[in-house]
Length: 113
Length: 113
Image (cartoon, rainbow over all chains, first blue to last red; front, side, top):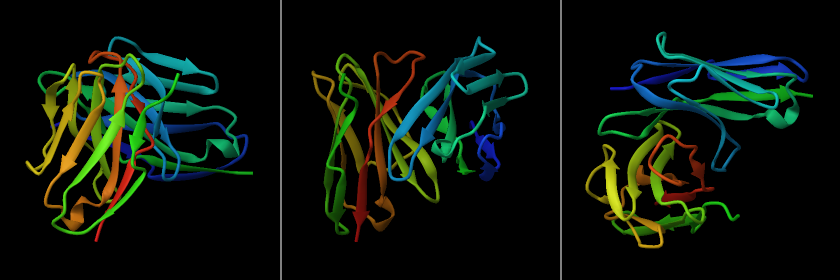
């Protein structure tokens, strides 16, 4: 059974700092990995999608990497801003008959002005 | 282009009642999936529909059911509500059931008293 772990559970940084969020998964047989952002009481916003054949994806100040062999992904946020404060979730799409997303428990990020 | 629309936004029910939640995907999207989010269990997959067919179902009791209509709109139903069913129910859509970004709605917050 696929398990996804995110460390740390919470992170507080001063504005302007570069930071890295971590995600690990137990089964490397994945179709893709997505990073999402969730604001309190809201739905999820997809930030980056990395296919299993890719190593990284970039969008603006965000960069996500994927290392399937080690079961790890990182989300790098450059020059953090208070508006980046949210919960960040990673999710892997497994294959076979269970083509569904398995989510980590998230990292709650607070960027202090 | 309108996003994923979920109705109602909030719902309060009592134990034993049944509830129906609605999801309208992004125009042109044919895949709809449902997730339950609770503080204790995080995000868990409920089921996925594509072209009116249920493709996958998560590990939930038979009280949880769903369907998809020819216009891709989806409904999920929970019968004989229990206190533990209190959660944020999220719907997500994508164009196909392949490796694409998921677009989530804002969710329906269900409280069971």
